[in-house]
Image (tube, rainbow over all chains, first blue to last red; front, side, top):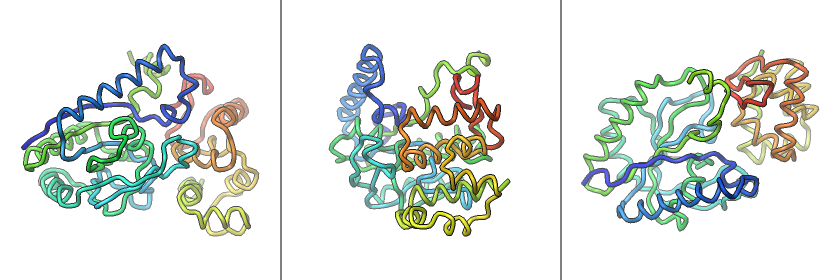
Length: 197
Length: 106
């Protein structure tokens, strides 16, 4: 098969942990878009979801920091943060070791990537999943990019990594969805960004 | 500057309940296992979250440590702003402040 769904969303922890502090006129349409994405994702009938997120020191530290890592476990658990703080309950999420292995094999042909058979999900993954797979019934293949512990991967290599993920999705018979999550709305009116514009 | 070990300590505390127990039982003894400067050690001993920010602890580590130490989000933000007003800017790491903290962080 091939890629059957591609999307992107924010994963900032305040989305769930401080949701009441946002103005309803801004918050409600935002949550409605998550729901719209959930419906579209389910309509694509994926067998698995590749979720690309940034490393937040949940699994790796600067003693051995992979630029890229893909999970290869049969199951995952999260959030690693205090569930009462994040307001997302801690639970198990299904993985697919065999699918992960085949995707990693293909990505490895063109990109150096680490793999992990142990992986704790943090807010970068569970905040999106709390909206997109609230029943935790879709196999997840977590993908991690180091974005916090310099030296960081150059953007052109991140682009090539994305192309490698696409080739990997196209090489497997399963119906695969891919979603990127990141700080797309952490600081949309950030002073430095205003200057750069 | 031993920012690596300062962050390693807080990373270990954030992830490991046994390290949390050691921190709660005898913080000074736990800190001997990490190569910290006197300034870093004092910041941890006194729960000076704002000083830890100034010393360069990554926000993805510090926000969870601050929560574990009992700070609300508002208290966490306030601690960083107070420290910024006192010290001017973050000394290391990637979370330099913009506009004294009013413009977020880079």
